[in-house]
Amino acid sequence: MKKRQKNEVIIFDTTLRDGEQCPGASMGLSEKMEVARQLARLKVDVIEAGFPIASPGDFEAVRAVAEHIRGPRIAGLARCLKGDIERCAEAVAPAGERGRIHVFLATSEIHRRYKLKKAKREIIRQAVEGVKYARRFCDDVQFSPEDASRTEPDFLAEVVRAVIDAGAGTVNIPDTVGYAIPSEFGDLIAYLFENVPGLEDVVVHVHCHNDLGLAVANSLAAVQNGARGIECTINGLGERAGNCSLEEVVMAIRTRKDFLRVRTGVDTRWLYPASRLVSRLTGMTVQRNKAIVGANAFAHEAGIHQDGILKERSTYEIMRPEDVGIPGTELVLGKHSGRHAFRNHLNRMGFKLSPAEMEKAYEAFIALADKKKTVYDDDIIAIVQEQMAEVPQVYVLSYLHVSSGTGTVPTATVRLRKGRKEFQDAACGDGPVDAALKTIDRISGVSGKLMDYSLQAVTQGKDAVGEVNMQVSYGGGQVVSGKGSSTDIVEASAKAYLNCLNRHLFMKDHASKKSKAVRDRRSPGRKSTRRAGGR
Ligand code: MN
Image 1 (cartoon, rainbow, N blue to C red):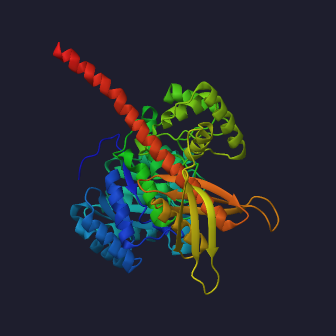
Image 2 (cartoon, rainbow, N blue to C red):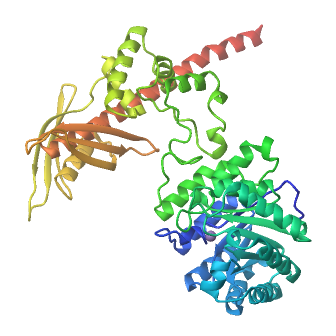
Image 3 (cartoon, rainbow, N blue to C red):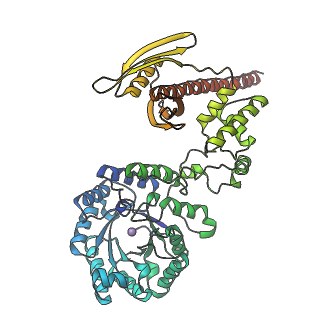
């Protein structure tokens, strides 16, 4: 085994084991493989791939990860029972010397009395036997005294000493129920180092749960007291409130290396992609304000903050979004944004407005921001469109007729005006809205993919105006949002769809003008270089 540096912290990912135990987050084999590949890209040190005895699916997953994933060590979980250990050994075998058997046994008084009904002496005997048996199959054996943080410290020290003597190379101290407080948990780790001879010769891990929101803090406190392994999961997924979040703990160590004086081997540029992947595969969405990987983690709204960021990023940013794999800071504009941020944002989007136009656009923006909490780029384009008279509404709806009902094929006839010309077509669809949108696609020759659709009543009563908001994707990652309103929901939908289409065409046109402008600006420079060379 590679000798570890004293300041290196092992990142042990258990997304596929503890994370998958999260209610509603179960994954199939191919999904687990995708996560495992991403973990290897992240360069975590250990992947705990599952609990092989738990089910045939778990066994297959651990075996497949052990067989196909290169780089990290591959661990499987087992109780201190022969059957568990044998099954686990079989599952991790394809990883060869990178395979690890992780055995566990509860040690706290509560677990001993109510769950295991075993005395202390018996617990030690079973733990030692488990570790010894696992060592018959695998050189790399890890032991966890479950519920360690609620175990009497002197008994915990006794257990840890016994399993080290039995051959465990890694000892994990779990805060299984998320009960510990950082300073207390740090003291427990320090206590073990003082009272267990030989503890410095093995690797000490911690496995913290987030029931009190302290999993990351407890893990860091343990590291400050000598622990050199952190068990964690992507997005903090896990039993109940979850586990220590990998992205948070890794970025805390990286950002505050000045203070913590340790490092991890994680390639942090894969953190955001890993978070998105796990969220997509498990269906567990990440809250917007989640540290590191939440949608708002790098978004600045207050005017003073935005102004600061534009002048010098470190004024309000302790990490760079690109360090965690986010392409760029999203400067969300809201009603607290000042003129400076607004102008800068327009410039970055490639717009050049006169001071008078800018002032008008800013006023329109503030009025919109008052109604709408967050103003997105598409909204700003709409504002600029209004301010710039030369921007045309490319397509305008001039006629719409739909027929639908039980037993009829929903059909739409649409007439669109483009400049002075009118175009008409008809199409069928799954419903009247679908038929109308398909007809618009046929006429414009641009096909959009509806990503999101919502219908709201703007006013009260049965004759209320319905407002349709939609997001349409036009390929290449571009998603445009638009809205339309009418007392007829099909017409509102068609208008919203046209709104998206017009914005898309405007942006496309704008982008090509912008790149042409860049080309024009560059070419005189090249000419002068040539002239200089000719002299
Ligand atoms: Mn756990």
